[in-house]
Length: 225
Image 1 (cartoon, rainbow, N blue to C red):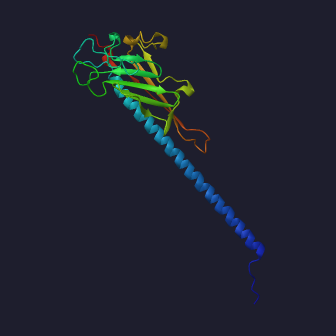
Image 2 (image 1 turned 120 degrees about the horizontal axis):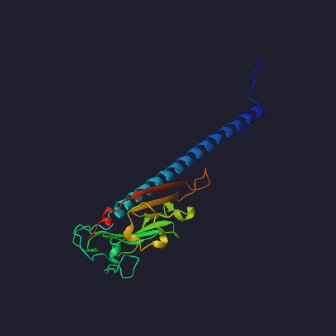
Image 3 (image 1 turned 90 degrees about the horizontal axis):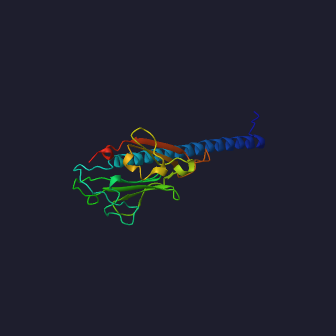
């Protein structure tokens, strides 16, 4: 009987086909892995952004808490070289600074009729535009990284969205030019965080972006005493 083997041409075609299939499988696996990493980074950005916003909202909502209705207790905040000293701006109560990218809130948490003698009674949030991060200062300590730029970047300035907006009792937005004089009139604060992943998504060739926002009613700030 005549036995026919595989020719060199057939062998080369088979090998070439195998290489193509392997390359296709590798490309699919690589794409899947990149997609998985990109989704994971976006999830981290969403979680970090939302957690940061929740903490900011919780603390800023407590601005001007003064259960004893004590007079003359408000102090200069971390942005002032006289931080901790009694401020002349007692009418500002527990919002001693109100800017588009920074805010200083104060509260008598331990109910001693004094500010700064308890933990976290003076809190300042500041948007560090140059480093694409938010810092948090407590009492008169130095600023500490709060959100960004390692895993995420805060990019409000890139898209032209202020981190803080302030509104009076009628719902009208208070212009930055009217602050800080209008601080006593603040009845609502909107916070917006625009957050990018630190790494570029290979499939999109850009960073993934999420936007987080909330509205705060600082009820203690409206108290009359």
